[in-house]
Length: 318
Image 1 (tube, rainbow, N blue to C red):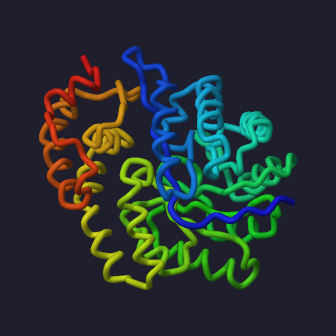
Image 2 (image 1 turned 180 degrees about the horizontal axis):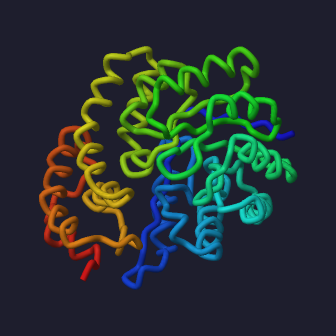
């Protein structure tokens, strides 16, 4: 069974869209090229932040192909392969193997309720190809992975790691303790930007987060400080990004994070998700809050010609 080391900051991609709400593959390629010039450890396409559930299988696979083409082996690629069933997930895994990607990120199936036994059956079934898998616990959006299930996933050779996006540090600490007792090569990573420092200090090997792709230099500075043993310095950077995260989290996910990307100068395009008039009315003041917060932490990494009205026009909401 292939081994894989997952450590440090990983950049989770959001999907940019064209004016007619199609995935903008050219923008995807530009973003991957930019990330390859940073110290980000790897790239994570087609996850929750990429709105994979709003995309067809063909659209998701087109994104995977573009990421693989542009990356060309320079960074690890841990690609989302979550589907409504094992059949769909196995189709993604087959493609990922052919593309030479490094591992898959897979949450339990969504929409229908699964018991613990059914979740375990799912993860066992997708192990048939032997492709390295990072299990993905994101209870806000799909069936949760309980500690009981987690402890049994540790016995599956193809499950190499866990991305925990529950924002539950208590649960993460239990996961770390359990794997240290039974399988020390297993890796636990956080999926929340606002808890990187406490999670890594507590034993997580890294993070899969959206700000890793939008603010890669800042997220890498957190890891640089932790690598020097400078926990106060890492916490200072962590605290500087919290206002940005609060502004993003006040919007339907992942729209708020796309607003951060918009301020940073990335192409995001028209969201696939439906945006109410009330939500649209909050975008302008939110862009201003995000910009002022970014100036405190992203010195030199944000465009100087900030114009929130022009940025809203780039969303093509009307």
